[in-house]
Image (cartoon, rainbow, N blue to C red; front, side):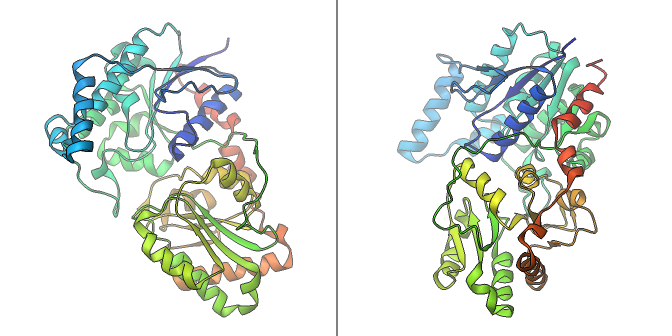
Length: 416
């Protein structure tokens, strides 16, 4: 008998965030694994996924919360009055959050899909699906709450952690999630352990479901003008948040070029993605370094994925910290690309844990000298044979696959 999974998710638009990309990959792999999947999503667009029934949850309108949320937006837009910190310190969340969660909960109450498992997914700092299902006790016995990042923000490791207005409400919300959900799921072992140190029940209910490697067919295989496939291309594709400075990578690349002048004409460092916090620094580097290409903005996923598959080296850059419990959303794409991953991460990080303690292409994000040494080693391998930079990690391909996901889900007590 085919088991049924109801997925409740913020968005299934893969262009709006890395969180949506990994959520869609998980949904697709559930279907590939043979489960009957129904998706209730709050994208508020008619988006369909192949082989999966999808329902766009309508927003509740003509209610007090809806009008209050719109009034708040009007005041902020027209009068430059930001009430969010004040309101969140009083209630914990915005009027929009409460109305969105109510919209999701109302839709689920009307759902007659007799699922074996209810899986809540979210993205960014939003856990609206979790808040909605928390209001529906009849679903708790088959609820799996997926926690993609630490929450609330003061649970983040340094340098990310900061205290939000209404933090105590958010903390209470997530404590209830940890207690009421039958299962919790995390993309990384380190994140499960990290959140369990704050909310111990996660250690009892937690399982690891890594971000998935689902099949994606590239629609446009043309390379942009800045990419020459015959060169030694080092690619970082992804948002460069305030805490993720690329300065060490750039300085390491420059040092590599100074130490290997013959590589200057055939090497390129490409940085793609939003980097507003580092824009001034990046402009200065770009002026005098034609070997570096920087695009500060959004790039269509199709283009990024094609470049990842054709770059010489893919960089996964994380913050300077004692620990990085996150599994980056692009990790599965880099594994699928089958090119060497240059990991710039803390010693204790999920990426390094998966690649292995003896993986040679790793450095702390600010270790300029070591970064240059690693790039030099990779360049020399590339000169000998570009195919020597293939990753060839079948163990990680399997770890991120639908088959492994099937084993995890079928091992749950409520599925059998």
